[in-house]
Length: 185
Image (cartoon, rainbow, N blue to C red; front, side, top):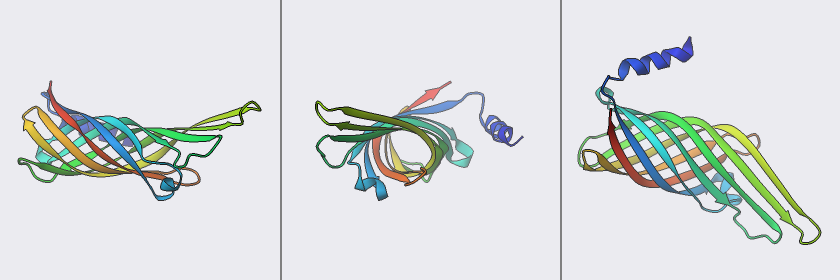
């Protein structure tokens, strides 16, 4: 019964003439915590869809993207990297409506990660290990939108991503910029 309560609440709040924001963002991914000891600055991007709930001054969001991190040091015969695909749902609260629209948000969901390890001993042998895992994580964010017209915004934000793994949690900060397009149905 609990699964359907949220769905019914969302359907009750959505009007018949829905407006969605489609966002496309590029990002620099800065590793933090234990993660910064092993991997270098990453990169990636995401696509997000938000639905404004105007009477509450908030937006419901769905986000997915791709981020890549390489090994921090160049070690001979050793190569390591990982990439992650977050699939997140959350909420954003618009703090002020004006020429600049600041907001705060929180998203949570699954981080699908692939780890690549390669050991190359020349003619002797080459050893490749690929590990895939999915873990829960969350991402608070702070940003602002700069409306250029009623259908097009520039979006700038910082988002802290924390992924809970079995041994050491991974964390990284995204500095993102991109565009939002208003889509009317």
